[in-house]
Image (cartoon, rainbow, N blue to C red; front, side):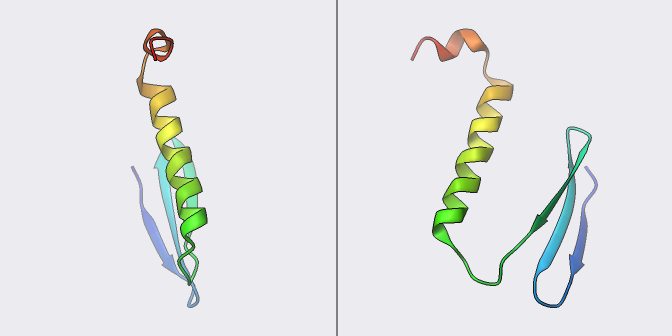
Length: 60
């Protein structure tokens, strides 16, 4: 995983590699709990879809 942090003065930008794809994340100056929750849920959903076999999803 390659990480690069760039401080643009107003906000920080981080570039990482996820499964070989470059992902750029920029952080806002103010915390927004609604957006943080959306990002958290998207990351959890992505992890579950990638790491849990489909047969286990139908057991719930």
